Image (tube, rainbow, N blue to C red; front, top):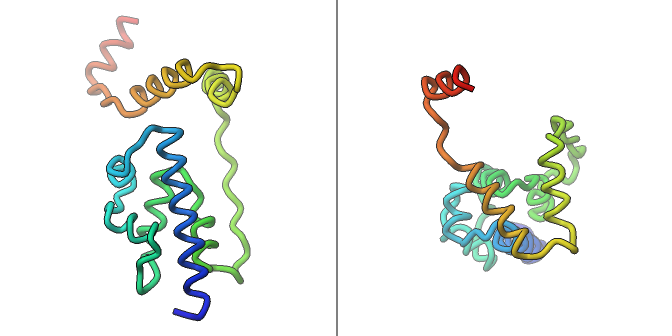
Length: 146
């Protein structure tokens, strides 16, 4: 660790805290849910928030944490002071988004839409995103009937 270690710890702790706050506010995830979705233990996340680590966090855990929350790992790497000399990687162009999904996203950020309606939109999306997939034979039967 270098003399900039306290600053790096504070920057990374701030990044993790913001990520957790956003997960709570936007997805209603608890600390346990964040841990489950990212594969990073609550103890590790709590150590990161406190800046209580003697050696740098493992790259794989930082990446898993970021990807589980839909964040760019480069932001976490910057907070940790990693890859400063490397040229920033350009993100791949995301695939085109379905117009209905875009409409839902616009409603979620529209201040005129009530909190209750935003809650129902999020809950419906969450249900659809994490429901189990139907077995192939059921999907084929539904396609033939439909």
